[in-house]
Length: 501
Image 1 (spheres, one colour):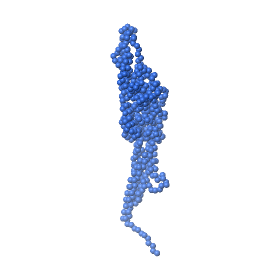
Image 2 (tube, rainbow, N blue to C red):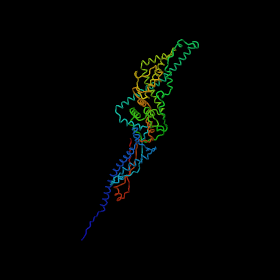
Image 3 (tube, rainbow, N blue to C red):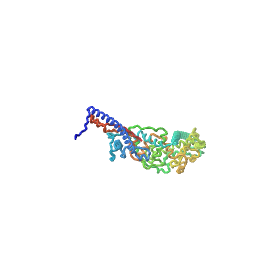
Image 4 (cartoon, rainbow, N blue to C red):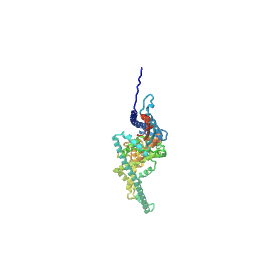
């Protein structure tokens, strides 16, 4: 039986056309595949840097409500390579998930390899004097605020400006009026000596001999001002914390690491400053609510004053509080007709029988200053004891009479029970912050965060950029490479990604 076999033939021309056509199809498919691989590489890069920033410090978040990535990873030293290594590990899985999932079989149309991964830029919390920290803190607080609270903060700022103006007036007037009084008193003494000489040595005029001595509260006030202020306004001065810190070791005092990316400055101005200062008072220890964990207990006072010990910071705050209260109390005393009349009557009695032009007026002015000072001592003692003091006094809230001015130190103990109406210590601390060196607050706050939690604030990353070089092994180009003798090439692609809190 005859058998037949199938035979097939193809012309050389058709063979060439088929190879060319197949190469064209493979090239087109490979081109489309590369576009998909590039999109996948970009997505994997974004997932990688996002995953890295997902390792934020939970301690910082829980205590201070801000997100930072610790660039030292708890080792104390900032390591860009460690960050890049972490990112590479996250991307490696996402680039080829089938390698980790052995039960899933199939062809990966987008095989890719990481050729290089590096962190090209970053922003640190300490950059630009803590501006990056400031921006995030303000944003986080502002998102949770209503319009009413913002208006309240603006009113607080205006009140702070008014009280600061009053304090400036008092400080200027205090120095001038006391100097003027001392000069006039010297003139009076000289006139007395001349009159004694004219009457024959020890003989004095009948008016001078018969002058009854009047208790001068100014002598007492002069002595009080030479005493330690903390002993006057705090019931038990020994209760003041004795902790101190080395400022040159803090991030604000040492040479800091700096990022190479600009800080995005979305929030600025007085409203943002008020919000940031409210953030500080809500998260850092104060005299009334000390933080026992850090190197300093009165952290808000440190942020305000920047001294290296709790005692020095508290003393500086108390002096500023006293000056602020002196200013507003003087404004009230000077505007009250009855109080001015009392001061004028006492001034006439103190001046005596030897007239010196301007002496009575000078005494009246200084008596009002001393009266405001005595009332302010009572105010600050009340605040330090947990009580409240109204920002502007009236007849019902004014405590100290002119007759009791010389005994003001005996009246201080009556303030230890607190009470009162108006603003408390933290409210006044907020006012002081509004009039302080705002530019220094962010770094000083980072000092306290560093001292409380450990680590280095100039290793805390807020934003980073990364550059990743990818290689895409060819799949559909193998046919053209074999039939057409094309060189084997592995396409590359560089992706840049960024992420920030």
